[in-house]
Length: 280
Image 1 (cartoon, helix red, strand yellow):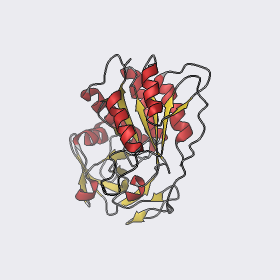
Image 2 (cartoon, helix red, strand yellow; image 1 turned 45 degrees about the vertical axis):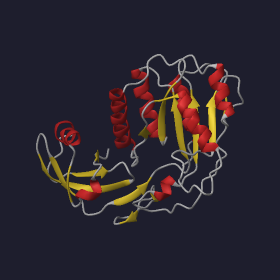
Image 3 (cartoon, helix red, strand yellow; image 1 turned 120 degrees about the horizontal axis):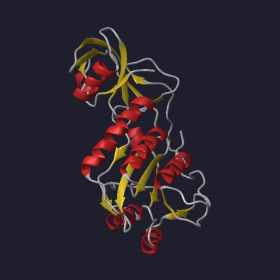
Image 4 (cartoon, helix red, strand yellow; image 1 turned 135 degrees about the vertical axis):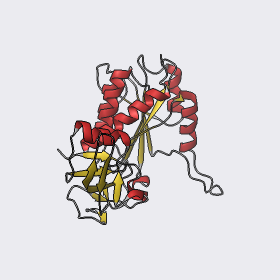
C-alpha cells in the first residue's frame, strides 16, 4: 500500500517539505518510515507528489520532492448531499464512504425533526475522517463538509440558485445546481443523473511529472473541477422530512426520488444516492 500524507501547503514548500505535526507523528510512530523511504504527498486541492524521506524523528518528518503533479480522480459530475446527519458513530462511517465514492460536498442540515444539531468540534472530527479516507482511496481533492445550516435558510439558497441570473449582476451564485433531488418514500425511483458532463478532460498528469494511466489533467487553479455540472440531493433526518419541508423542496424545484420499498437509514440512503449519481 502506498504511504500517502496530507500536506495542505505542499506547493509553497517544495522542494523540501515538512509534514504537518499529525501527519509526521503518524509517519514516524505508526508507519515507522525511515530515511530514504519513498512516500506520496497530496494537498487536498488536486495535486500529488512522490517524495523521499530525508529526516525523521518522533515529532518531525522532512521529505524532498522535485515534481508536483495535478492529478484528477474526481467524478465528471459534482454530487453534493444535504443531509440530516445521523448519530456520531454512523455519521463517521457515512462520511468515510461518501469520500471514497467521490461526493464533492456535504451540507449538514438542521431539519424540523433533527434531534441534535452537529457541533463544530464534531464536524472537525468528520473533516479529519475525510483526510484519512482520501489517503486510503487515492483521492487528491478533499470532500468539503460545510458548516450546519437550518432547512429554511438552505432552501432560500436553493430558490436563489434556481432563479435566472440578472444580466446586470455578473456576480456568480455561491452555490448552483443543474439538478436538485429530495429523497422521499413512495416517489419515482432514482435513476442515473441526466446531467451531462461538460468539457474535455485529458488523460495524463499535468506539468512537472510523469503521466499516470488512471489520472486526468487539471490545472493548478482547479477551474476544470469548478466548471463541472453539479447535482444536489437532500436526505432528511431520522423520521424523515415533514410534509411542509417536502412541499418547500418541491416549491423550489426539487425532484422527489425514491430508493425502494424499504425504509433506509440515513447513511444507507446517502451511499445509495452517491453510488447512483457519481459518474467517473
